[in-house]
Length: 340
Ligand SMILES: NC(=O)c1ccc[n+]([C@@H]2O[C@H](COP(=O)([O-])OP(=O)(O)OC[C@H]3O[C@@H](n4cnc5c(N)ncnc54)[C@H](OP(=O)(O)O)[C@@H]3O)[C@@H](O)[C@H]2O)c1
Image: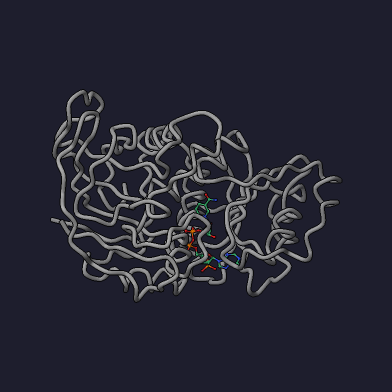
């Protein structure tokens, strides 16, 4: 079978198609014909050598796929050939609170990922796809979808009517927008591009701010949220955005620390006092569990959410797909089709 390997720090040019030997599923294992993979910012971090979970040798790239079950080993009860599935992000986090052991191995991080024609995994590393989702859409659930779900549902425990702030229009943020709107929440979106803001409006965004034209965008977010601020900011920006996200949240509000598309260094404008006087809670989140993936999958099925996929590349165009993600020109997710 053909797989795409990357080596931490070797750049996009270091991505290589290579042959690996396929194997039959053992007891409790499932074989999946991978049909689509989606990319995440962390995949760029891996090739650039700045992803914290790293190993010095080549591993199969990427964390998120969807595909079709083609064989099951002895004792597999959850799946049968023909089932459509997506994988979990971690090897060890089934359910419950996070722990070191649960997040110590992540697909396409420090162990082999999913950018391969075929996968053999324990049945506990998979969840069923919602019936209406195609494989490309299904391949966006694992990381971006689950992370947004974790922030909105598990961490902030928001109710319909709550207000959520999404920074930029990348994978996590557009998933956050789609989940928030389907759950009856207001969603304020920032972007560097008016054209992208219009696309966010079409998806139901209730407030729009261009962060290039309005560098102190937190004031605009406050205005758009009745002067009170949002209940949750999903903080994917980092440097230069953290203090503004905190300022955008209401008293008692929450900031989910997710990423650093504008840099992972310290935000010199951030002051702990802004958390104290606002009685605000800030928490780092690391994707999520298999139970969250299953809950998200049910929610997406019930609400017929169609995740936004900006562009789909072929299996031979993997480097182009990475470069498209790196350009930041995308809106939502970037995907790669695998196999037939
Ligand atoms: N903690 C976790 O478990 C977890 C899980 C998933 C992702 N992440 C992290 O979350 C971040 C987002 O991941 P992703 O895969 O969604 O990335 P992505 O799709 O590559 O997002 C790129 C988008 O970020 C926006 N952006 C860039 N600079 C910005 C700024 N200064 N302010 C606001 N938006 C800005 C841009 O939107 P516009 O073009 O609209 O301006 C850009 O298109 C990454 O840092 C990633 O490492 C963490």
